[in-house]
Amino acid sequence: MADIVEYRTEGRVAVITLNRPEARNAVNGDVAAGLEAAVDRMEADEQVWVGILTANTAGQERPVFCAGADLKAINSGDAGALNTERGGFAGFVYRERTKPIIAAVDGLATAGGCEIVLAADMVVATERSAFGLAEVKRNLIAGAGGLFRLPRAIGQAAAMEAILTGEPIPAERAHQLGLINRLVPAGGAMDAAQQLADQICACAPLAVWASRRVVLASAWADDDTLKKMTNQAFGEVLSSEDTKEGLTAFIEKRPPNWSGR
Image 1 (cartoon, helix red, strand yellow):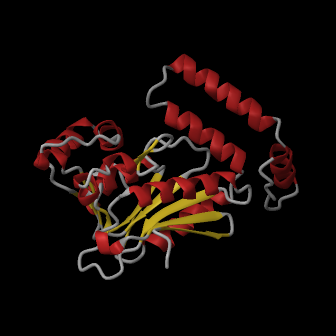
Image 2 (cartoon, helix red, strand yellow):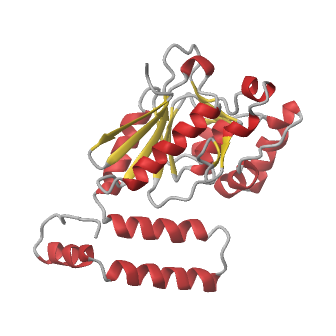
């Protein structure tokens, strides 16, 4: 029997797959626990530097990356299982981590599914994808970060319209607004995400992780705090073995061999 959240590695990249296509990859307790465990595994593996989060849409007439919370689980009294102590909803949206994750979306990401995408670091999506927070249509609110992450990603005006109408944002529009890094034809999300991950893996991992930390803090921290964080990150990276390797490789006109140390 296949895992409800699958995990595999391809070189330096961990591929995490939501594998509940018969339920539109809706999040129940098993998905939340499985996704948190997959991120734990990625973070603990020194050989992995970047993650890709995708979804199995096999057999779906209209592909759905994730339909959000499993309403059947909520209705049966299992709502608490959809959150974990460290990760929040789906074991993911508030999970602290070091390594960047790319969401590879081929289909609809709605409600909590959209909030999972917003919690990733980058998004690759196909032209048939869409992103929505439809909670207001059910007298609910997006409670897993969407109300503040969507405005950060696409601006307040566009986010306010999407949130207050509950209407999904088509992929082309989401790309124009800056939610999507790369827009590709249907079926091409994983290949494009792998290409982006490989580009990141070609860079020094310590510098990538430190830079990510400061960029994320820029959403809430003041300039003095960011200056301190940048100086600290710069010092940590400068004292690493990889800095000497990067400078030596430049002088010797060869590709660097990063160690992550």
